[in-house]
Length: 285
Image (cartoon, one colour):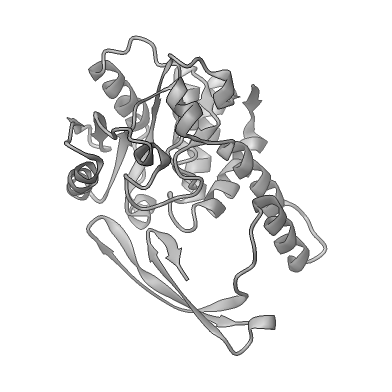
């Protein structure tokens, strides 16, 4: 257990945006919301999944929709707690032991911090993706048979609804339609979980990993090559391509940012080209 201060939040926002691979919302928006929340309410307690009680009840809070729209349609501010408390009340849960991020992303790593700060509850260091993916069933909770519903969805106007579906594919389809009607971005609370489910099915230490990545990106290095190598090491990854962006094609369709990025190779990849296809997140290269 430890507490997240302003410096930790800045690093987490940067690192989660890196893991978000283009999705999960704008890191600046998320960071400013979280910094404001801890300035008003104090630092947030971060706990590991191993530290929570197996029988305790937890809810996440996240933004759903096209990231480019969320930049222009800034949240009012009370949506995060509203959607969280609505689902807790619907499920007749008097005590919600904590919250957790559904994915790593610039906004979606920060929204649970806002909720935790405002409600004075812990943030659990796990998520369901380890990065960001565009659709609701693309999480380890779904892969282990958990239901995404009941879920709550709300917008900045105050509209709010509860959804129960026959399976998680239908959750994605119906929630996406509602999100589009709400202006292509909405706030959701989904995949209600016990402490045991977070322990068994969650991807552990994602907040801590985001923070470590953020420290590298925001840190000072002799040159960019040294920083890239540090990123490879902290993520246990590999460098696929070096290049510059030549062209970006994008459209907002069905509540998603869809398109592709064309890259021209540099250094060891000079003379080569790469194409990255994205659906909110960069998915295929």
